[in-house]
Picture: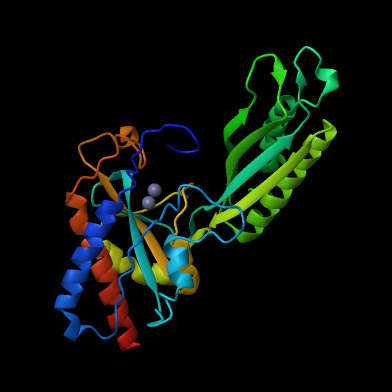
Length: 318
Ligand SMILES: [Zn+2]
Ligand SMILES: [Zn+2]
């Protein structure tokens, strides 16, 4: 059951692959511990996708956010943090990366439109939250298209659910909607929040209704440190036998972003789609058809192991 509805459940993000990769990396690096000029800490990712629901009181914490709050990056305090995510639609064993913003911030949007219940044949006796809801959804389309400077980074505002009403001839008291706000820049993110609030509240006001807007900041944008990215590029090339490409911006979010706020971070994508398949037709992560070509796991281990060791040796030499 999720939000009172029976739904099928599958995560299919690839975190089983990540766990296998990191465990193998830990096994290899502990085997050569006496030769490492420094310390390596292995952070696994419990509850990366968060709890199934969020209490809008600002105190939500889970996964990497909670681990950071509880001090996982305090002792020892890392000089750099590395991570990877398996990715469908990228050939198995290929690494895709980009410096700077890489994955989006992800904030939950909750909207309640309060009208006044009446008979649908006498709409003038009430306030129709269904019509206001429709105007709200259309109005929200202008937040990105008309009010956001997208010349450096894009942004997204999507409505994913809309619930209201019980019968065809009753105008209901209220309508609930939920959606997501995504961006790659902290300034754009805050402006989006303000513009979404204003748009929703003023559209409701124009219809005589009231709107309650709640925005829950779930994930910060995942930003790769440009200097660290450039420094570690040879390690990525070695790990993937030279098969390293540039990655596009990803509209998904990552709680690696919380680690990368504490120390310079580098997060890369590891292709897991069999090389004889049409990449454009591969089922994406989170799709029921998501598939991991396990030959990529070795490249994942080589990636994390070489990033950690090469970084430590380079630092020791500096
Ligand atoms: Zn996921
Ligand atoms: Zn994931």
